Length: 352
Image (cartoon, rainbow, N blue to C red; front, side, top):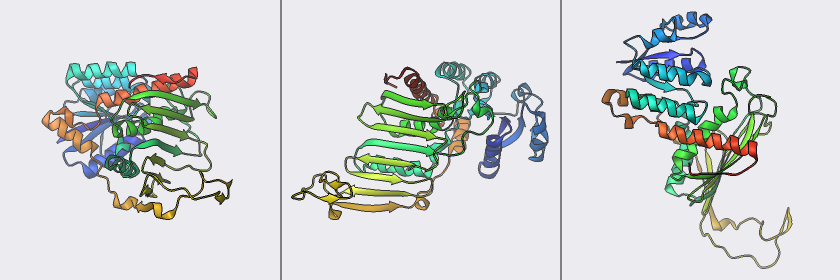
């Protein structure tokens, strides 16, 4: 039975404790530490040990794995201290404030032989798994443009996520998830990054952005995060050379329209539409396509991050860890390129 210790007893600390207790048979949560002493009573109510300091948790010989669910600017220090104390580390996203910090942490992981991994839980979202399945099967051909969005209208929660020093902002919050999804789905380097990052209602951190990525294999993708979108946009809109996919929201499932013939005969003469006389933008003949719906309920996901992490700790085979440090480094470098692009108003060309 492996034992986990939690640093940061907030919403995500609660999430992991509940998940491990209910679903992970080979791991248990022993205790937690939070810098705020007012959290101690809550920790005790959950039947956990209250550690008086992070060092006390690190020095507990029963602790095998440390979960870091603290503001982003504390990740590096705690991760290094935990691994040097002989503990594996599961860190909430984003892994670090920048790639330089991540390089330091990866070096310590290799030096100590301890796992460092990141909770990229959105890899198991059902909407994403539908998209990934359609992509891998070539159902709509090769995508030439992928749009992935998350819309909100309430702004950023009024806590550390609004402060620059703590690594707040939407790029490091939701952006890191959507970037990670595309990078593990599309097996090709990112060669160009262009972004518009806005501080619309928050002086210190980004609250809206559009990020364009071009992959070496010719696929183009746009990620958009908005916190002041009062009319939501589709979660996914993908055009391939043989069809189109639309996912309206998290629970809607997918609508797919596939071309039966990639080439078609044009109607003779002008076609009159709501847009006026046009043949180019007229509707395609119905018998030239087929449509179907993928119900979200039919596409089940088996969230395996913790189980796979336990497998890796048990066998010593760290290739079993579902989120590898090198994958995390790629998404970190894409985010850095996005910030650079927005500040300098340029397309950042690289091979990420």
